[in-house]
Length: 334
Image 1 (cartoon, rainbow, N blue to C red):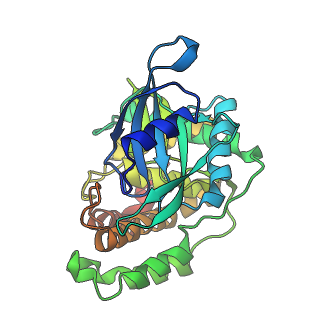
Image 2 (image 1 turned 120 degrees about the horizontal axis):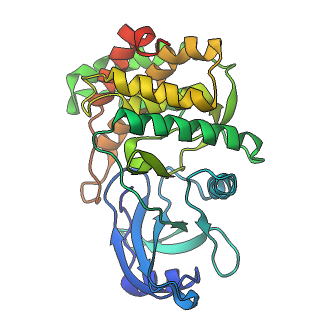
């Protein structure tokens, strides 16, 4: 999450009123992440008498197409109805799950951008997750995979192998501006893309389940959030993404075998992996690490200097990729 586009106080007040959730009390920009502009919203609760309420307002930026929003927002409602710990979409007073907002750009032009209001869920994200928390995440992820199998809408993965090659080309000749070690990335991308499996069991996947997209109360999962990369894809790939996100130190240099074992065990208490899925996990994890390496590198080179956003080091995922290439079979051993 981040804030790329500003919304003035009067416009923010009118926007929140359109969702019928009461009068705006406060709106605070959220700096984490790199994809969309987000605010923590507090209102007086309106006529329901429940007192103040909190929500997340999201304005969708470059990587999110408005045409994808019925999928993303409909998925949240589908999963919430199935009992998964995800936030509901707040529909506006006309019943729509999102609205278009005339955003003023830095050059003075006006661009229509989609905005949605999402239920705020309690809990905190883990900076140093425990095995018990990783187990709970595995359980919750498998539950989403099973619940999403009958979701009627479909969306292709826009961050798959074709996108990796695109981002590689966009960063060509500029790797040294980040770190010389990244010069190896183009060859790695071509190799992994050429070996990518295409016949593993599918569902709708989260595709971005980092610790900051999981809310915890104690050891339990109270919320899975930020489904804006969700798509149809291999369930084992989603598990590999989560493994890469949860089982390493932030710099990717230290692998935590206890977290790995707990995450995998939790997942398999709900949904057992097939033999072909388990065999593919080391390669899937290399692809997962590559995907985040490349988007981090692209953002490092292309994010505006005055954007309220924290750049993330792509080398942390090069370290993960290299670990999986050397030790992947051991990392996912039963």
